[in-house]
Image (cartoon, rainbow, N blue to C red; front, side, top):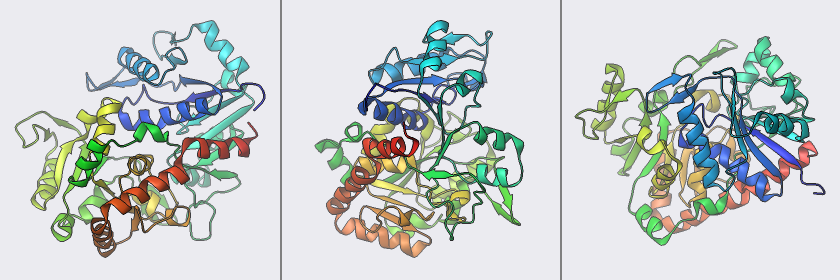
Length: 408
């Protein structure tokens, strides 16, 4: 690659200190490092961080700093991160202020992961500014509506990448306008998810699972007279009878507003509407556990995936109904661990092989057929799941394509 190019990953690991977000970012950091780049992680979102110990967003960034430091030390880059706090006076942690300034002066590229950072003056001086969208559809629709915030956000970048691999296709209802989107997907550091004999044995005797937010509000979209919902609870409730019909143990690790109590899991939802939904799911045979307890650090989250038989999940309506082609970064981790995935179709079958190790569904019958196929020869589908991750999600492969498409 000639000189050792410097890449800055702009992320939100501290602002949203949960394992799913952390794994997403760390795969980019480590993937670029393995390709020979001089890589740094920087958090400069201008937002207060969430503190799970206090269960609140707080101006005190102590938890975020300790969390980022621990993660970057774990992946062998303890001195390659910086965090700019909102208060006090936008102080910089991790790097010194002079190191922070020099970092951006000498950077060859920034990767604005999830598009969550509004680029500042020092960011704009970096020659390659990559907008990397992990949640498509809303940005495209907001731009089509003339929303100045999203228009300015995208225009501040030189290249645009999206997990919506079907954007721009004839069968996709998402407007793309004049933006030249490059399709990409979650890079996975494969050896981080290598199964042991013990984990493989546990998985073969365990249940299908997923980790999900239960109810999320405020992000539904209306486009061309259609309302596209964001919250996944709609999809799970539409399949409430699945455990009875599938005779397949299914577990949901759910994140919702709750408190420790006297429930079966020592965890009771705080809101009656959610509590009623959990009772309904449990009555129909779903196993329910607390996602927060396994998501506060990356290793319990990974252990949970590796102890699962596979993943069963639904997709957000915003991804599925317009046929965006989106595929979950979490599902990619299940595949890399050799865990078969059964997930709602978003159009991703045009880009990823389905039918062995990975199954897309639109209805109950397709789910039941997928479980029957997997359970008839679990080892074959486990190997197929790993092979899909190796061929389509391996970090070196995914990021090399991005590098070529940007000229980095």
